[in-house]
Amino acid sequence: MVFACLLAAAAAADPLPAKDQMLVATELIQGDVFVKTVIVLMHHDSRGAMGFVVNRPTEVPVAEVISDDDALSGYEGNIYWGGPVQMQSLRAMLKTDDPPEGAERIVGSVYLVPVDDSLTDALDDPSNLRLYLGYAGWAPGQLDRELAMGSWIVVGASEERVFSREPTTLWKELAPREEHRAAIGFR
Image (cartoon, rainbow, N blue to C red; front, side):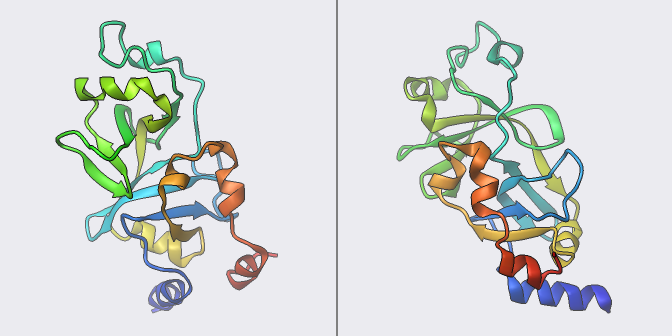
């Protein structure tokens, strides 16, 4: 009963997270994994939730992730930490008006795309391509409980936010303001 009341209160305070939404960590998130993160959601349903941390570029050299003979070996952008699940996997987001086959729209002209030879044209402008190691994932109901506890706020996703020119400052720009913090119990 208490959980249901908390969930109802959280739903009334923030929109329910969906594919075109972002999660912004509140101060309740502690530790190194999700503290001060911004996550663009790919899905949130009865099977759980999945998304990518968009504000954590890494210092991982491209050569450690992409072999010299790979079509993306000329990629000059950062490799991003997408989340703690399947850290050995590489995924790509592309900002384009002409998505390749197999692309899944995230928001606006931003797509989750297969990491394959179809991305070689994107190397001409690496500001429109982001590569992610891993992803963020939640079991069924887990994200709902975290939302009810006030661990995340939900904001609208946009191309500008997903492909922020200053990703390391994105959390500070979107972090809960004082009035929201007071409403969920922060002092």
